[in-house]
Image 1 (cartoon, rainbow, N blue to C red):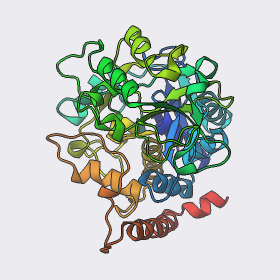
Image 2: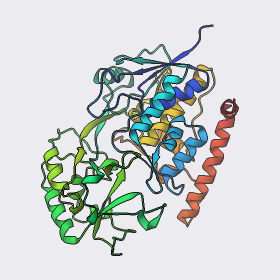
Image 3: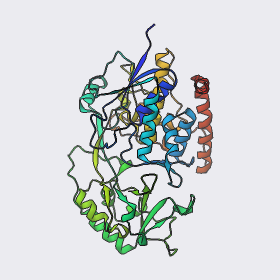
Image 4: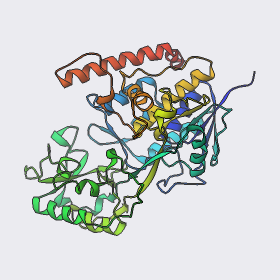
Length: 443
């Protein structure tokens, strides 16, 4: 009998997770990746699992949806999240990583796995006769996207994502900065470098930001709410930034005073020599980024080693063509994972890749597919994009408590979140036993 080989197209977060899961469960995988021969405008590294927008995988607090999601995926055996934990950088209650070490770690695992055959090429057409996980991400090759349209009906959707700038630590005026976490959470002096502004400084920054020159957007371009450019946020109201990325709550300067506004920077690499300006995704021109962001007192002489850029994110209209197991409704051999499927966020993409692989494993072994229940965070996301969202105005969905099904009513939000977490862990255990994955993971 001929051995089944699964094609995984794309070695980003979702594709890498899919390939590693299948390979670790004895399945031969052809992993197709266009890098290093071809890169998108957002990619810089040659390796797999490159993080382009931020180095943060968000909070680990189980009272947050992102924390719950990570707990679920670790329980399911996520290989990519385990690498992330091994190359983390200090970030309070968040899981942030050294991008280079993270990419290197995942790349090494893939290339050392005897069941994974890496093929460096650009795929422009799908082969519907072979089991395939398509995980080409938000910057899917145009020819491949056009080919996919033939099988999913209609046109693809898209929004524009923004990347935050990075500055060097030694170029920051430390007399106008202090290390701290909100409410003094975490260890040591703090994981975030905080740049306080008084009211006059904030208003000056705000006024220059809202009139700064941006890269001209086309009429059809959209901005996803979860990754709002800082200048778009500012134009929504003079106080909006102070309730968003510049909020001063839980922070006090060196004199013990609460600032009017605070810009936070997070370590980009393990050495801490590069810092990401948190929440400063932007579509400003490079010259305007330097001019306007240098109005933040501590960044007066900042050295920008990467400016913010915008890039198009493609995703399918999932409610029309995808089921909650990430399988195309009309073409059973094809599973779609990651941001292309309509999930939004790093960890959500990892989870999508993992669940697509689990169900691909069942599919090639002639077993019924198994969606995660919507009482779990990952199950709720996949259920939403496939079954609950409107196909008429579909937008990507990230982890949040609003979409998780809770069968009980609670007056206290903390009690409700505690119940959802405990119930989710039980549901994951049941799911693993039904899939016979617990035994496989032990072997």
